[in-house]
Image 1 (tube, rainbow, N blue to C red):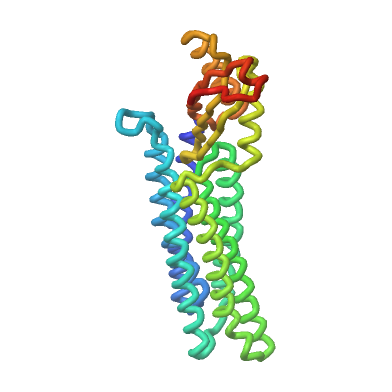
Image 2 (image 1 turned 45 degrees about the vertical axis):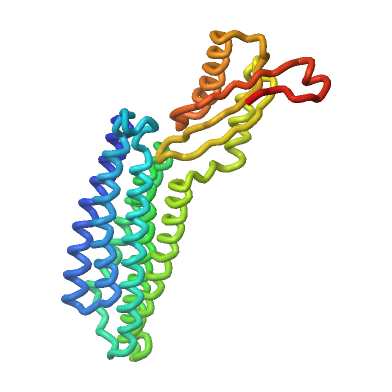
Length: 306
């Protein structure tokens, strides 16, 4: 299966799962009056919207370059990731509000059915997270990684739901009324973890949209490869930025001034090939050549004109 098709398949699996789990949690939560399960179900409903956004952005991102988008459509995935973060933020605020509100009402009776639904969600979402994060990192798909982290938020939510409902059941069994609010307390914990993930996802999406450079270690790797080209006498500058699931690199180097246009072109191709052969996620390498003079280099004078 091609990588783009594998990504879309994983997102489709996530979408179908979210629809199914949303229905289970909301129906069981309402029927057995579980606040944390209802809140988790609403969060899953938001996941459906987020997954649709991820699916749409993944389809756009796989489109080839065109006249209006010469750098490709990779950032569509980043937009999809940002939309997932927004949905998670709204879900976190909703969960927090209704969980706090529950403390001002009599504690709801806990249910083993609600506990079972939360356990099913926990196991299912853990599998979906592992599946999507492995594939997303392998293919460097921002939309799929965002979907994976959305599943991770659900794992946290399900853990809290299991714990909260479990505590409430213990409270009923031993007549400890205060433990009846374990369900509502779990909802607040869920809100915290979902909010935390939304923040990190949103920050990463903004960094990419604002053309933040890649990590210093990655830049050093690129520079080492550029210097491995024999004709390169000096590296005047190197920049790189993520463009969704791929990276674009800009390089300025000094080469011997006596090289003709064809030779300079060949050097550019060597630089591009050196980087792209070692880094599969680099889609484009833009090379600018500056003239380098051996005599001026020895004297310490200016060596380039651009």
